[in-house]
Length: 332
Image (cartoon, rainbow, N blue to C red):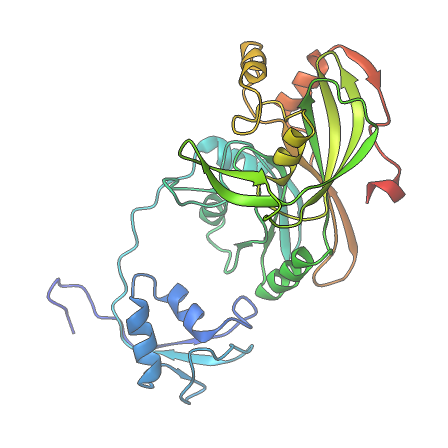
């Protein structure tokens, strides 16, 4: 049978559920399988019994089980949009900068300057580039996010069961995170916990900002001084909560914003560093510790500083170097 535009109408087909989709709701599964089909139509074919699981009628909220056989009726799926290839530099980084990988998870050293996913005018993010690079992967999802200009440890799940477990870790205290940041000026304290609530999406001059506010969400970050330089301080920042721009806003609250922070930093200081050839945010997701979602083994993963960040530190005249590798018990 042919349609008016002379393209074949799809036939009934059956999909056996693997661990890539185990635990997913039927409606969400169909939306992913039938991209371009309106949600209203997907719910209608479920309601009318055209979609069946193991030959029986089913509810949209029904969670899929390993081995389920899902019947999908003939339905026209919108043609895929022309693929927009990922930038060559991003692709090169994704191939080269793998920190850890097995059959359940993948951890990369994300480069600065790339959003973790597309949207809001961004055609290709890290996850889209990774899927393009690995077309054979049946399941590949972001576990958490990093700001566009932040580099470092970024986790992906290769199984839905691993994704669920890792999401539980992030909602609780199952993941310990450590960032390296270069603050403007000399921050003389050795250690300080900033416990200041953050309010998201406050408009300032047409730009969405995060600010410290009593009406915001509880937010806590531990800052440790690692090294003092002529006009900057290298710190380790360990967030106890995971709010948007948390480390950046808390650093600015200290009176020592992160070098290269165009949103919360000091314009004149950022310009001075740009004149020296430095153009990015000095914030790097350095270390992660969590239990492997399948084996339970404790993973301690480290993302080396990118060359441009290390080069900046090497150029600075060090006045005082403290312990750059905290003891394991203090580290995590």
